[in-house]
Image (cartoon, rainbow, N blue to C red):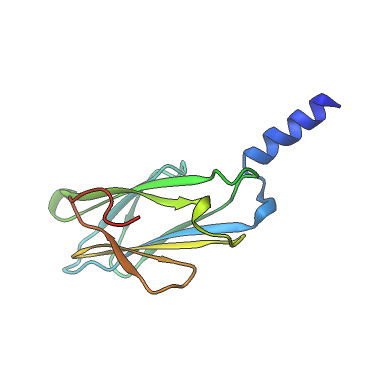
Length: 132
């Protein structure tokens, strides 16, 4: 009985999709045909996103609501402008299927959650966190 409960707890903490499916989207709205290089800690590796395109991944939050993903965006000549940030944290939303959209623009990185209007959250090469 103890082994069954232990196995269930481990399985739930590793993200069975029992609590819904959340999504992170990273969008390239840069100018002058700039490419956006994206790397998140979701084990999918580095992605190159062209202007007007998006990269997204979906996942299930773990049972303990501790799911968290960080990403890094690079852009500009030789990808010299960059920023690292937390792209998703389960504590940000009460929804079982949260949607976090990050938009790369010339003046910074914008964030929209669950369809809200995008607000600038980060500067390129600037402080890691403008607002919490």
